[in-house]
Length: 239
Image 1 (cartoon, rainbow, N blue to C red):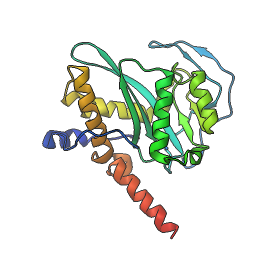
Image 2 (cartoon, one colour):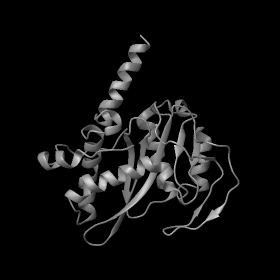
Image 3 (cartoon, rainbow, N blue to C red):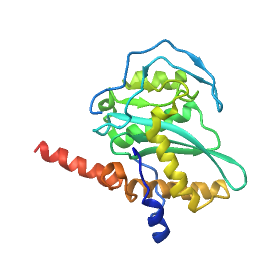
Image 4 (cartoon, helix red, strand yellow):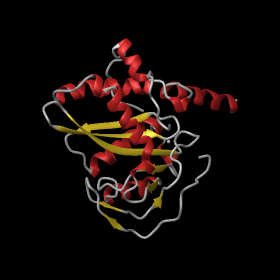
C-alpha cells in the first residue's frame, strides 16, 4: 500500500503521542502514466464542481524514487464534536512521504494553496527555489487547484502541473491514503471539540507522522529518518 502506517495505532495506544507541537516543516522509475496535455473537459462532482485543467494529465503511478521529483497536494474535511467542519490541506513528497507544509482552516482558497506551496518550497530549498524547476505538482481538479492564481504561480516557478482525469481522485491516492491514516491513527484516538483544540493537536500529530510513525513503503522508517538516510547515501556517493 503506498502510504501504510498501520502499526501507528498500536504504537499510539502504548505511548500517548510522544511528540510536541512545533511549526510545521519542511516529491517512477520514469514518467510512466503521464501523457501530453488534453483538451479541457467539464465534469460534475458530488462534492464540488471540477473542471479538467490544461496541463499534464496523470494516470499512472504516484510514488517516485527520488525526493523533490513529484509533490502531491490535496484537501480533506473533518468535523469537530460541535459539528463545525475544518479543512486540512497538505503537500507531501511522493518519494519520502514527508508532509512538508500544511494548513488547517475553516475555509481554504487558491491563495491558501499558493501560500502552502511557497512554504513547502522554502522548507526544501530555502533561498535556492530555482532548484525546484521541473518538479511535478500533482493535485486533483478541485477549484483551489485549477485556479488561474495557482497555475500562474506554477508557471512562474517552473513547476509542472499534473492533474488526474476528472472523477478519478484515486490518481492522487498517496495523499488520500495519508488522510485515511491521519483520521484512523490520530483523529479517532483524540476527538476534537473546538478549533483551539484542533490547532493544538494537529501540529503535534503531523510532527509525529513525519518523525516517529513507521511507514510500510519506507521499510518501516519514518519519513524524516528515511529522508535523512537518503541524504546521507547521496552525500556519500558524491564524496
